[in-house]
Image 1: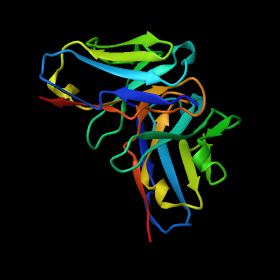
Image 2: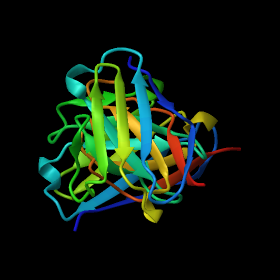
Image 3: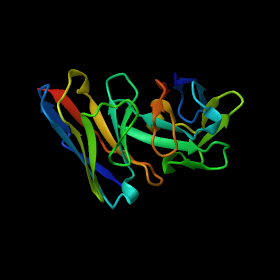
Image 4: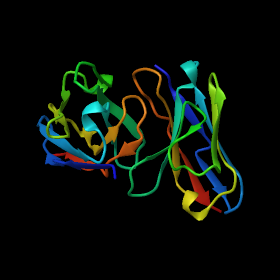
Amino acid sequence: EIVLTQSPGTLSLSPGERATLSCRASQTVPSNYLAWYQQKPGQAPRLLIYFASRRATGIPDRFSGSGSGTDFSLTISSLEPEDFAVYYCQHHGYSPLNFGGGTKVEIK
Amino acid sequence: EVLLVESGGGLVQPGGSLRVSCAASGFPFSSSYMSWVRQAPRRGLEWVANMNQDGSFIDYVDSVKGRFTISRDNAKNSLYLQMNSLSAEDTAVYYCAIGGNYWSSWGQGTLVTVSS
């Protein structure tokens, strides 16, 4: 079973700043089967990235994913007001399809 | 427009049963892998179960194996989750989502509360 650890737990930034979120796996994620989701209060998660770096349909290019093996990151190049939310990583290689604990990006 | 609408949530006593449903529209449901994902109050996300297009491949997280059953009716564009022997640890919002291993679209969720 792959366990995902996200850091930091909370990231306090201002609009326009760059955000870098980390996701570390307990073992190698095969074939970079790693996804990222955004969740706002009271809403369902939204898929941002899959296969570590592929943007989902309709996702702005300020969101980018990178990494391989056990270390992955999500970067938001310039934070927009609507980007303040909780972000989860998830490996999609094999069961169980675990999520990380989440990183909250809050307004500083 | 893709639409997933969950229903059937509510309050159930420990040890009880509940079936939640998901009505799908706006995409080829019968050609789509489908899943259930849950989120306990103020907690993170947990994948629960998935099912392939014709129901021949099904998988569950260990914590629900033997208690939960995922099913689908392609003629009705509907996905179901039968939950038995419920405990407080099953209290969560249950989301229906498109996909098997990662999820491109989600419903708004239905809240299941297990409490006496």
